[in-house]
Amino acid sequence: MKKICVILSAGMVLAGCSGSSTSNKTEDLYSDNTTMSKVKNMFRSTKNITTKEMNVATLIASTFDTLPIPLQRFTAYNSAHDDNSKTIYTQIDSVTFADEFKKSLPQLKANILLQESAIQSLESGNKIIYDRAVKALNAAKSGNDDQFLWGYNVGNIVFNSVIGEANGGCNGWMSGLRDRNGEFAEEFAIAEIAYIANALETKIADSMLDKTFYSEEDAKKYIINYAYSLSGQELFNIVRAAQDEYGTAKYTADFTGVKGIQFTVSNGSSFACTNSGLVWGKNNTDWFGAGNLSGKKYITKIEYSDSAEMGKSYKMDLNSNSTQSNSNSADTTVKSK
Image (cartoon, rainbow, N blue to C red; front, top):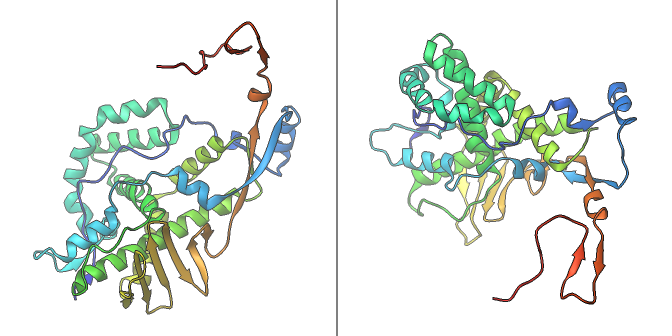
């Protein structure tokens, strides 16, 4: 069996990201128990505002995009069948060895420079994402901040691929019954992304406790701002911890006709990845997935305003075939073809 190691893919997503919402200062997106927040709320109108609780795991999952293919699992599967490769690796594994990163650095810089116009187009979007992309562009041009480019690369892989894949699902195995290397690669990739996503999303969820967001969009802006503010070193530590936990583990697949991909691990964990999502079982509970993060459900509060709908009035005109509204919106009557 091939062992798991790391290699760098130079063709990574460089400038794009999930959640291109317009930036606000993070502290303006929510209220909490601080004195400053209480003072601000004294001048806010809360008329026609309803506060509802929302599951943070669900909110995070809807914030980050899911790629059309499971890139981490796909990369691992391909590496398992590459005769020129002695190792099994996912795309995120590429960030863990400095030597491999240095080898790919010229191509990485070239890719960033090719996306200069795309990076500049981010200016009207989220400021944190735009600023980090511009810093990466300047680093690629000057060649004197390779450490930042490394962290930039880590973040892009985690937020543009790993999180979405962990919150997605599986239609079934790529590997067959006798394809032990392929099976091992898929199992490792699934376990690794679950570990990374859970660790990162738990950090975000912990920071959202005792906050009430002014809208669902503001909550998503907060998630994006928090995630992209994490340093490359923080993300690197999470990735390495995932490798330490699952890189040398033994896996046992369940081929008894169960749905999707299901397997157990020698450390006591179990994983079930179906088209309904990925669930990591640990300590006799759903540790990640099914709405849980680190074995529990995190809840945050979000304000919803119905003032726009309540401010709209309608009048029935019996001399007309349609209902009239005081709104200046377009004609919404149903018309026949």
